[in-house]
Length: 252
Image 1: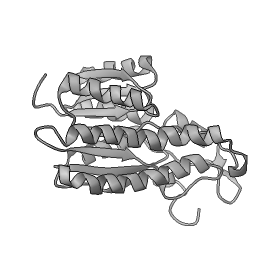
Image 2: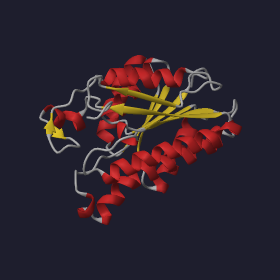
Image 3: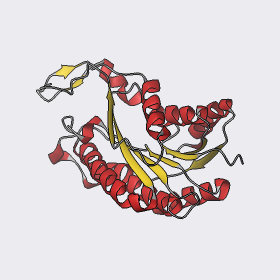
């Protein structure tokens, strides 16, 4: 292993934002551990990342499962000896369902992945980062525009993303003594499979249906790479990157 290379874990690396960020980090010289539920999708990401002569490690993992998360970080440490960057990206949106009609299982499946999964990965990352030499590292959480303002009928997703903001702040505070920086990127309408529906129109707060603009995934990846590029004595605490004309700023 090239000792000069930094080591990153990207969760949800099989598609969308996670895949794009993983490939961008590889181009910046990172060795990248690719985590997600679908091994075939992770292998496709690895193939693309390796075009930059980057080392990759594919680890199928379910971030909502504590044992799976422990295995992910143990394999990372065994393979590379350290961890410099964790991008907590894995998440699910769930279906648009009125709050009063949600089942416990629908609520739990979103919160377990989005919030508890981020907590579990953060916990394991801190254990490695605080005891390695040189000490420290960086954790970047994928929040969302929904960490500030929800869409209609999105209680589990919005609650989980608001929770991410609190977890980001606590991680930033508790990580200081170990030289661990933590920041959050809030993304609005990045062009992925999940936002394809926006081209046909999505519900707005006033009850209407409207088409919403999207933004290029590559611009999201550039933003994450910038956050990751800072020395550990500097931190982007919160960054919002969004489609310029999406209906977020103002009264909608």
